[in-house]
Length: 216
Image (cartoon, rainbow, N blue to C red):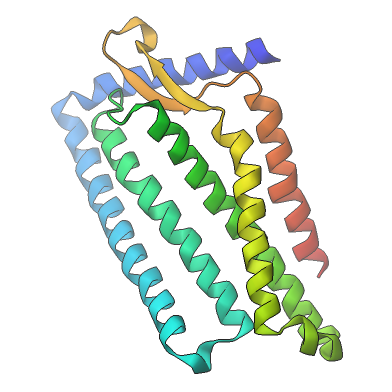
C-alpha cells in the first residue's frame, strides 16, 4: 500500500513536470492570465467579505447571537484558508517547481489549511445540531444556546481542529530535485503514513459529519 501510494505521488509529480514545461510556452499565458485574475478576484472578494462579516458581528451587540457566532467562526476559518492557500497557489501555477519558503513553512501551511478545513466542518456540524435543538427541543435550547456556552463550544471546536490537523500536517514536506531536475522543489505530502492518516481524516471529517447533518 505504501509503495502504491509513493508510485502515485511520483506519477503526479511527473505529470506536473510536463505541465511545467507547457507553462514555458507562450500559449500557456492564455490559461495562466485568466486563472490568475480569477484567483485574485476570489482572494480579494473573500478577504473583504469575511472581514466585513467579522467586523459587523463584533461591533453590533444586537448581532451577538449563537447563530452569528458560528458564522463568525466560519468567516475566520475562511480567512485562514484564503490567506494560507491562494497566494501560494498563485505562485505555484507560475512557478510550479520553485517553493521559496522552506520546509517549516510548508508544514505550517499544511497545519493552517487542515485546521481551517477541520474547523469549518465541525462548526457547520455544531451549527446544525444547535438548529435542530432550537427547533425540536425549544426548552433545551434556552440553556444550550447561551452565548457563553456557544463560545466554549467554538473554542473546543478550534482546539479539536488544531489537534487533529497535526498528524495531517506532519505528512507535508519539501520534495527536491523533482523528476531528477536540479534546483526544483515542491511542497507536497510525502510522509510514510499519509494514506492511513487521510483515510481516517476523510471518515472523521466527511463521513461522520455528513451523516449527522443528513439525519438531523
